[in-house]
Length: 151
Ligand SMILES: [Zn+2]
Image 1: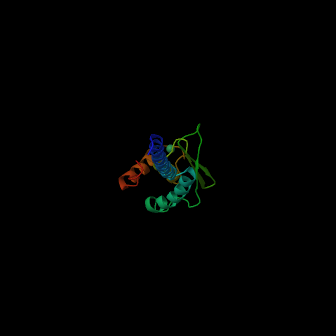
Image 2 (image 1 turned 90 degrees about the vertical axis):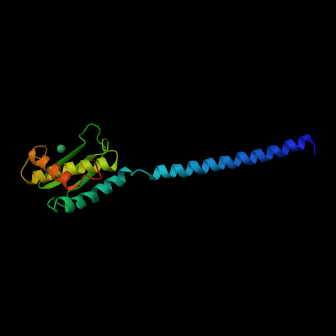
Image 3 (image 1 turned 45 degrees about the vertical axis):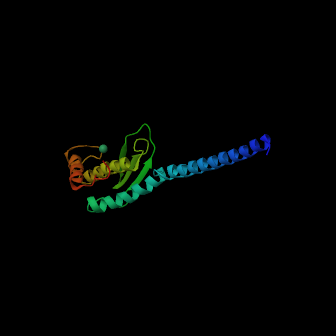
């Protein structure tokens, strides 16, 4: 066995080790990357979740007193409020600002906030007010445990 041949053999096994580790690291990176990509809900998912939440919250926490045709929109509006509710001829449109409510839980908390505006408005109060009726709605929800997962 010449010195040259031994060097060549060692080189091959080193290259094999290098390739093994490169493949291992790349495989790990790809799987971690996939997990990160699948992790937090995408805006389109949160839009769907909020629409489902509205009817579930309405049933569970508002005794289905809120209109069923309310439109929920999760939308990025950097110069706008965290949330906004508009009313047009008895039909409500709730905007949850994805610019400020980046995650599902803050979006859901804002949805509760806006649903209280709808409840208060149905009781004859101004839509935008955070007066005693709106405060009462939020306190009632808090005491009932509605915010357990969102605050
Ligand atoms: Zn408000």
